Length: 306
Image (cartoon, rainbow, N blue to C red; front, side, top):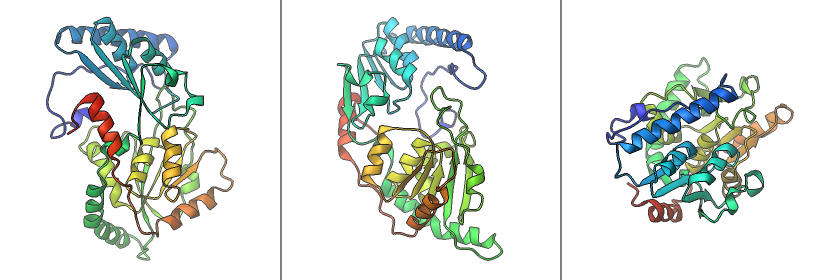
């Protein structure tokens, strides 16, 4: 996203750092990269002594670097209970920890009970998803999208058009969450628009995707973030993943008509859930209401949100 920041983020001094995770990176290599990253961030911060606030989402190594450089405010944000290593590191250096009220306490490392924790309401996509813009984009594009798809099929099929977001994994916590479902979805009666996790990472589309997914009839994905964004837009969403997140539990309670989850590596009963999801796409779309409490929370903690 940062590579495609033109028009989205102002130009500011920045530092590229290596992720100490990924396929083929062993324990010792991970420790080496983590130490190197902390040293690089510390050197960078020394160039800007006036910076006194560090805000990260899941990036606990920067919190440690900021602590060693004696920066006053070190704010750690997360909505991912399974990111245990990052949480343990954040506990060593954060001055404030922001977690969702829906946090699955039994799945965490005990971070939730720390005195520095403040709980934000709703879920993070409520903070940045513009449902009104999503409605506008859908109204402008859906008819043209259907016409284009129908023109490419022999029978002029009017099947639902589904955005398929496939994740490639490699994160420190998601290796055990991914389900290989490709063979299960081949014959579903929908038109898929496919994209991989890395397909638009260096293009302007990565900024537009949270809004542009609203133009489709539904979403199928292994990404918990994409699933949450789609549900906020009011889209019937099929999440195929073993991932457990408190924000997903909250969405299931808030929008049981939209979020369909499959957590098993076995395909028994998969077709039944898929049919329910497809039927939901025939219903009138009803996006989530704008949640003002989470906006007020983060403006209080971080300042005005543009």
